[in-house]
Image (cartoon, rainbow over all chains, first blue to last red):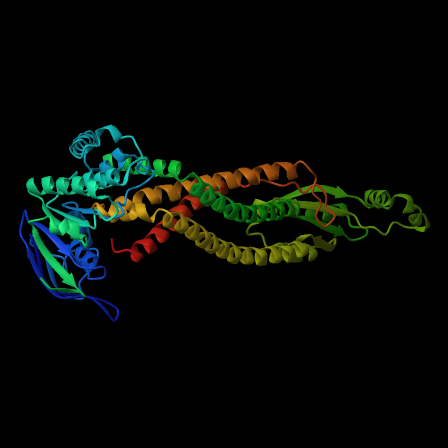
Length: 216
Length: 298
């Protein structure tokens, strides 16, 4: 599903990632771990097509990101979900509108969008908060909205960058259960985290980065 | 079609959610277009005044002393035959003296000392502005002066020509200043809209994150820009019209010449300014959002 071949990313003289080769299979659940500044976020951004590698090749579902045209990249992103530590929700839109947005960009009928949004919000346990605004919700609820938005189009891959970084342990557990259930439905899940708690209690694959290189 | 309905829905929702930013943008467009429209109005009035003065172009054909009736009739028939010319009247020597006395008023006594009437009889001819096009007044003057019985021909063209020269210079200056003003308007609007877009960069980022195409993100902004442009132009014209109505109720005197009435912009100019607002709003949004997209690869 995801293949990286000798990928290096430089920002000026600064080397963020060096000679990364990685293969993540369809339906896998992978943690990218490492201390702050190890290159976890850069790696996710490269796999999402938000950055281009300085060297090397990245293939997502067989598509080479180095050669992809901008419109094709937009199309690919519709099959990829992304969850951030800071949720990235639109505070002036309701929970429902935030989630529906990802379906609307596909140009789907409003009735279909509405149905999908209701379903996914029910799945993340937020049916009763559809008309609330993000700032009226707790951190855990906001993250669930972000996950619902990432999942509404039933993506092939879900990337999450420190998704529990702002949440307390109890909520973190809930969010991780949600990710696990998403993975069980067939979506490849890649989570970048530096949280030891998350990594200690898992039997999933862990890729560890340090100073821009894979160390284990 | 479904997409366009969605674009308009987004645009109106954005306007409603970002009212303050839109008020500021529309206000800026209004002020800049008001300046531009005022400038256009000024030139429309100058043009109108030139036209009015042009319509009052007159020619006086002075006759020699003691000219006989036959020569007079011949001159008259030539004058009537000039295309676009209208023979206003014949002023006899006596009439000319009467009019001079009237003009002098209380000083008319000065003329009492004259033994003979030195004033010549004359024909007065008027030219309508549209007919003036293509008429070589200088040639007519020469032709008439060569006729027996004609002493001198005078016309108001000389000073009008000088004035028209000044106006055409003003018009060139106007085009240059107007062009510069348009560029300035575009620059100001672009930057205002850019600020508005910048305040919504999170929104653009999220749209790109969920796989929206560039056009899906851009079109609502372009609609907003166009609406702001049109609204700004309409408000600017409204303010200009109110000011015009206030001023035109008063008699304006220019160079001591009374009754130069003000005119408002013709319909074509009004449509032009509204279209300009639309185009400027659209272009400014297009430039602003284009620059913004370059900043983020998302």
